[in-house]
Image (cartoon, rainbow, N blue to C red; front, side, top):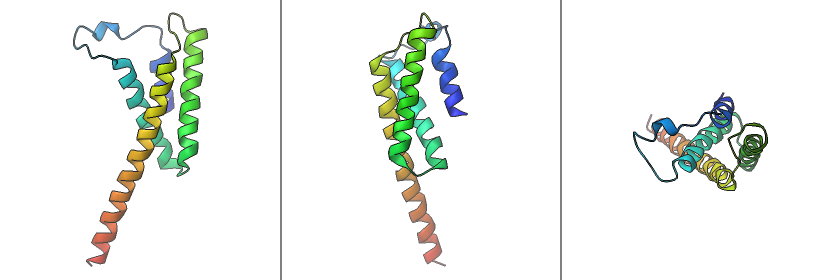
Length: 115
């Protein structure tokens, strides 16, 4: 589901420029890539614990999206910095998942040992 949402948002031919009058954040598109790929990586972590493979799959998926944008969805263009943002987002997502999982597991173990 997350991958489908990323594909839709990345491949749509209209841009989000209509929202720039509300707030203008530098590098907002790179931030959006990072956030989307954080959620993609977390979604994949729920299904599997093979973290290096999850980062690799997420990055390859981002690369495919960038190629599709560049060759099949004008006026969209593929950018290396977008792919780097996807990679960074995937790493952050995996690290976040591991952190949350360890905190949750620790909390469950502490509550079980008190009983």
